[in-house]
Length: 622
Image (tube, rainbow, N blue to C red; front, side):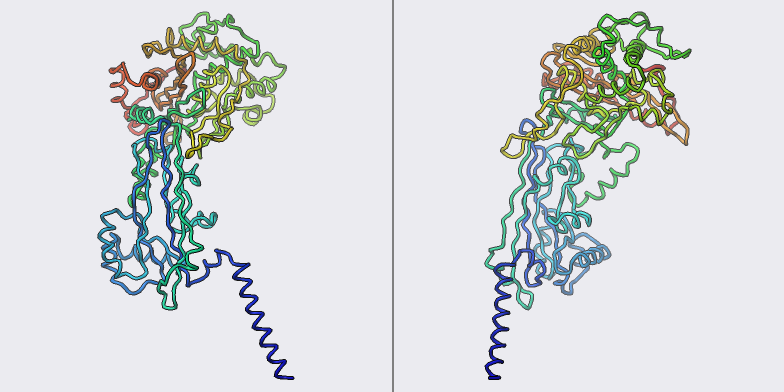
């Protein structure tokens, strides 16, 4: 009886173990379990990132082969460190530091020891890798740029860091990830899906073949190609025009909201952030705190918009019914706020809407601004209405673009001024600088270009975006194809556009006309201040210009902002006209103007805060 009981217990325990193991193998097995099995090695097969093309199918970003030296710390055997370091092009201290970092990450998982070997270095090293147990070479692809432009838009990729590894289980040490621009915004589309092979090892740690006959292995899926809205030719030309100048340019196709060019100056060749010199090059660019080449002025700079903003105050005045096209104001070479005269360059005299716009009369728009606020019982109500109109043009907030960064600009509201001056202690005359685009208003070049596109469309715009299509699918997020309407009725845009057209015919941009193209535009000169040793100093004004063309059926709307560029038509206006002609005609007819803009720089202006030379200051904004 005892023998039978003992045998029964042994059989029961045996069946329990067999059942449990079968359950774990058949029903509870997860591929993640093999991560903890030291007898199974995972080898990743990385796909190529998706290619990036411009709006016309021209290649912007492709791939080139590169090779990483990988290490599995627990498999490393004694080696000739000096020889190995010589082959890798690193010193012994760097080698030991990298080995320690790899051990901390995982003794049994592969880590990148030396990334991105060139084909030449790979060829030299491959012959001798058999002497260095625990190390192997992994092929991957790096970015190849078919342009030296658009670094701020395209972005760059770099190795994942500890934060990435902690917060996204997809990545493993040594992988590359989009950091800025399109590479970051469309990372999941561009990166594809890496494949994996599971290799079984024996008790001597030797590879003996695929685990489970490769049933758990996966093939890599190449990243999808994307087409973006940039015009490669226009982008490259615009960056040439920005040589020696600081500022931002954004061009938009009004009928779609597609960004045709997004230029930041100064910029850099995107190829500098590829390969083993990437870190060194990035440090040089990042720590250039004077010219700031990595700071994207097209979407981060927030200067006052200056006189282009007058067009919006005109539209609000018409919409609110406080003015019409015949409403006139007298300019006394400026306008009075109390007993103080604020200056104007228009020449003085009687101004109506049309001449107020094309002569950029400060007094006219100060009068319009007062009338807008006088319509309402309280300043607060007037401000609420004014703010609503301005924000309907996409100002004072993030536009909702598909760019991974950007600044919101500023349209001040009641709370803003109550905090600054006190509740009930300010009025329209207190904030009269807003009438001419100065004061507390701030807008990025992207916002100014979008505002101009809304005027070109006579009252609506599409959310600016950089994506045109993904893979073979031409569809994009519907929010980029739905029009967003302003609070201004369509009928009020024509007289304002007529005034903007006359800026070229009779006004402040009459010297920058383009033969055969009708343009509507607006110059702007923006006061510019800086603090030097704690003292507020006025520098040479910023040059601003907005325009769209042709007036009927517009193909391009753009904003140009040039730091320390003097008055609006001097630099920004000339550059805008060249870009418009380049885009619409495909060639430049005014070769003398082109030569001048390509050769002229403003480096002497940017040096003045440090050299002590005087600045050229316009007494009044216009």
